[in-house]
Image 1 (cartoon, rainbow, N blue to C red):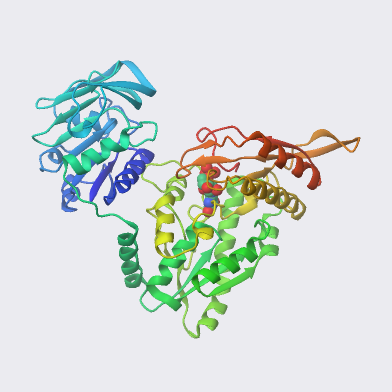
Image 2 (tube, rainbow, N blue to C red):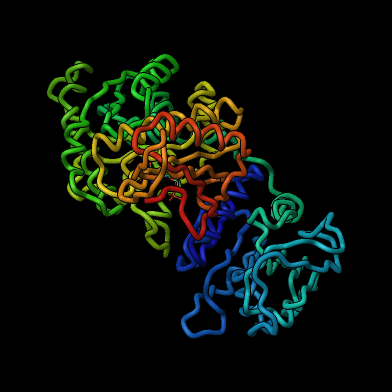
Length: 516
Ligand code: XMP
C-alpha cells in the first residue's frame, strides 16, 4: 500500500482519497505508529500529511528519521513537509508572512513531482511556519512570498516535499502532483478499482460471518443499499434486510424503497412500522445530540425486535442473528469523532449514536470509503442508477430537520414542503448538480405574513441546496432564481402554516449541511 501518515485528522483522509483516485490503494496510519511497524506493511510509498501543530513547538509530533532511510519514496505535505525538512537538518521557522488560502507559487524547476507545471501555479496554502532553507541534498523547486522553499526534491533518496495542499480541489494542479509522485517518481502501477475492492470485501465478509445469520438496516439511501448488496454477494440468503419506518421518512419513501430495492436486488426485506415508538421516545426532545442518540438507540432496539421474525423467515430456528450490517462511510466516522484526533462535530446515528449494550457485532464494509467510491461499487454490483445516484438522506431523517420538538403535525408540514422542493428540483434537471437539498422547518420561529388578505403568523421553511464531493466540505448551490421562485410559491400555497421560504447561503465550514 501507499501509507498516509496522519498528523491531523481531515487532511490525511483527503490525501488517502486522492491516492485512490490515482488508482493506487492507500492506507492511513497514525503518526504515533513506530516506523518499524510502518515499514513492516511493505509500503511502496509514504506520504506525510498536514496537521495543526508547529514543528518547533515543544510536544509537536515528529517522525523517526529512519523513515527517510528505508529506500521508500516519501512525500511530505505542509506540516509533513516541515517535519521532513526539520528532521533532515533544514531551517524551519515562523514565516515572515503567513499564507492562508489561494497563493501563487513560482515554479523554478518543473520536474519530478512538478513535471508538466507552468512557471506559476495557483495553490492552496495554510501555514504560518516556513521552510527557510532546504536540508542538504535537496533542490528547491518552487517558492512563494511567504515560503522561500515551497517545494523541494532529493531525487537520489526519493524524498519530496511541498508547502501547499495538493489534496484540496482549490489547488487545481494538486492531483497532477500526487500522480507524479505515485506514478512518475515512485513507479507505482494501478491497483485500486471497484472490482478489487469488491473482491477483498467479499472475502473478508465470508470469513467473518461463517454460517451465521445477518441483518442489514436499510435506510433507503445509497450507503446501506450498497453495503447490503456487497454482503449479499458474499453470503447470499444468510442476509435479511430490515427497513424501519420511524415516522421521519419523506413522502413516498417506504413504497419506493420496498419497490426499488427488492426489485433490483432480490434481497429478502422485512419492513417494520415503528413510527409510534420513535415519536413517543422523541416527545419533548429539542436538543440535536439527544435526538440523534435516541434515534440511534431506537434503531437498534427495533432490529433486536425484528430478530425473531428474521430467524423464522430464514428457517433458522434456534439460531440468533449475530451480525448487523451498516452502511457507515468514512466521513461519518471522522465527524462522529472516530478518526484519530478528530473532534466530535455531530454523532451520526449509526456511529456515535449506538447504544453501549449493542448485542450485534457490526459489519461495516464501507467504513473506509468515500461516497464516490461507494457509488462506483454500487454500479459495479449492478445496482440501478435510481439507487446509486440517490441524494444522501440522513438516517435520523426529518427528525433533524425540524428545529424544535418533533410532532406528527410538524412532520406532515415538512414532508409536504420537502416533496415540493424535490419535485421542482428534479423537474429542473438539477438532481445530479445538487449533492442534496435538506428542507428545514424552523418550527419555533414565527413571523408575520399576509395570505388571502389575512394576517398570518406562520413558520419559515429553509431550503439548503448544497454542492459537495464527499460531504466533508460543501458550498451552497446556485439554484436558478426561477426554480427557487416556483418552490417558494408552491410551498407557501400548499403547506399550511408556512408563510415564508428562505435560502441558506452558507458553506460548510462554517455551517454543516444539516441544521442539526
Ligand atoms: P453534516 O450535517 O454533518 O452532514 O454536514 C454531512 C452528511 O451526513 C449526513 N448526516 C447523517 N447521515 N446519520 C446519517 O446516516 C446521521 O446521523 C447523519 N447526520 C448527518 C448529512 O445528510 C450529509 O449528507
